[in-house]
Length: 589
Image (cartoon, rainbow, N blue to C red):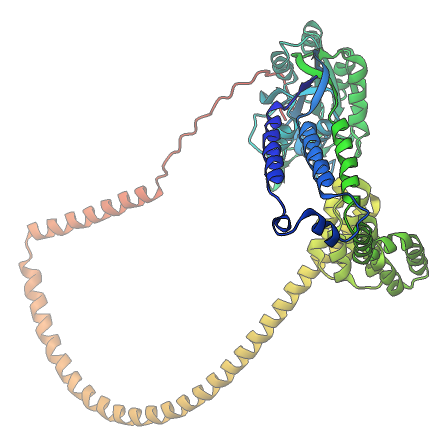
């Protein structure tokens, strides 16, 4: 026999010390009275004596210490080999994965499927890579799925990757990641890429024994690719519509793998994983040495508990203590037990009241039932039917569940409650979240109605604002016009009087000035005529030539200014060349 924790046995030293202290410490009464006197003073007791009880307590302590030390026998070491299936998951992040033929888009569903594979994978080790025209390793092969889920949640697939879906690059990266393993499995989450043959890819996969499994993430009808506020176009300016490329199906099947079209539930993921488990051999990882033994701790533990019960039963009034404890327990916890027993009857009454449209009574019944997700869901439905939309919203929000069906119904009904409460934006958000879980016709119809209502509400708000602004402007203009008319009339009257006075004075003054001016003009004219005559007579040939040159210079200056104004500056354009892996690809998205 061995002990797994032998250091705990040192606690026995303290027990020995405790026994010694108890044995040497005599009772205070024995110092003043003889044994015969003490015997007569004692009350008769059918229980165990102090000495016997102390011996039992010390034995119990020793047994507890032995149990804590974990005694074992038949200890031996055994090698345990771990067997796992290596898998690489490749996520397509090319532009075509932004198409919206799957709500909200293909890349969102691909990330959801990737997380689902991690959740449902058993006995697997997984690595992840992204690919467009190039491949990027996100995580090497690992068993740490918790870290992988964290990486996926924080993965930014909106980066500007080079256009294209290069499956050959995916196979090269997969072969590199799985070079130390005999079994090589690749799961591709893609819409099929832009190749129609995959001849080289198939040869590479068969040569390196890579089994390709594919989930086709696109519809046969296809959809345009969003590009900012517009859609992606080809070289001719036509909007590009990308549908599922069926060629990748042949690549998967011919490589000893498998193919399945996407589904909104988990059936596609489970089908792929089941096929991998059937077809793939498990790889043996590093073995671990594990110690095997037979546990013996429960023998001293059970014996210690039995001795403890015997020791306690010998205490005076032990039965009274037990009865008191049971009574207190019954007083403190009766309500929950009683409610749990009668829940089925209350639930039956609640359902009956709900079906009979007695929603207030149904609410009262559901409130008496123990709290659970289903109870909160039914209570919220009753609030909704009773038109207590605020309480319905509050109760729906309390529901926390991993059940996809219940979660979808909760989000759908939350959208209904917000819509009834006239919170249209929040209703739209809830419907969109519900559609991510289940592609339901009723939810789609509801979200379209909400969109129309939001559009109409926005239009009504704008019309009201425009009308209010128009009324304010009309009133302001009318007040301004009235004030202006009054002011103009006052000014006109004043101006008329002033103009009349001024006119009278001016007429008199003008007449005087006219007489003086006529006389002065005549004198100036006579002087000017005489001066001009003298000037013309004395003009030289040099002055005449200078005048002619100045005129010509002025004309030339105007001519050059006009030419400079009409002159345009040329702009040089230089073409930037790009290098492609395959210049024959006509659809590099």
